[in-house]
Amino acid sequence: MLTRKKFLGLTATALAAPMVISSTARAADKVITWKSSGHGPASDPSQIYHDKCCNAITKASGGRLVVKPFVGGSIVPAYKELDAVDQNVLQFCYTCPMYNLDKWKAAGLISSRPGALPGEALRSWFDFAGGADLMNKMMEGYNVMTFPGALSPLPEEVFFHSKVKLEGMQSIKGLKARCMGDGGEILKRMGAATVIIPGGELFEAMQRGTIDAFEYSTLASNWTMHFNEVAKYVYLSSTRAPSDPQVFYVNKDAWAKLPDDLKELVQAVVAKYTQDQHEYLVAESLKAVEKFKAAGNEVLRVPKDIDEALLAEADKFYAEKSKSEKPIFKEIYESMKNFGIAYAAVK
Image (cartoon, rainbow, N blue to C red):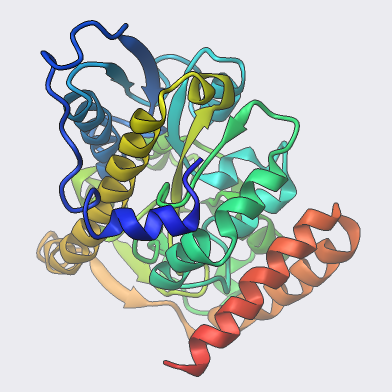
């Protein structure tokens, strides 16, 4: 397991240029093969970076560890990747914590959470302030683990792509919207008719009229998925999802069988690609704003009364959950909250 101390040392060396071990030097070693799945369609940048990361691990290991990448939904149903890792159907996966709310209500705290930490702070909390350790504590009993560097925070998520213009809170009442995780639960409490639909099915759901609005990832990701064609309005706000984090998970037994040098290599390569994905999407999302506008979309800020109502409802929601859920929920919530207070004080 990579400790935070070791992780700090890697950031200066292996994260910038992961070690490459020649195939000739390790020719006698037995080849280890893993299967890994992302959670999105092939066009989703998160899936693309998942695939790049898997291929980079294979190359950097000189072929000692072959990580075969698969598109979300091709091995197991979409959003069931972590279950497959637990069962060793997959040894590795890259998915959103909120897709596992059926197992751990606290998973929604480390995901696209209303009022949560912005991306930079979230990754720092995860890597160096106990976040990864708390996630592993949350997952006790499952044959799954994660590690510092495995979380890519991503920029703030698009609040909504919508066919309906949001005029204020009255527009939320009865709005048929795809909204995942805690954000979906909170918007439902505010009167929206929220549903769960995999990302690869959103385009068709909008065409059919199954939904009128949806949240999904960043501006950059959503431009590549042609969402400009199915929704006139693009609503931006950092309240519902100040970051859109995804995390790499690994099967504990598969991990235990890796030699120590391969463990460090995997963690170094993963940390590089999760950071690269975040920085890439920040830059591309800035460009995507103009692309959506040029395509005829209206890019707007969410009305203030919706933002304020969402944050107020989120405070009530998490206060209730902290009392009613398992202790790990409150432990994670308080850890993130205290880190956020300290972070805001120096900004």
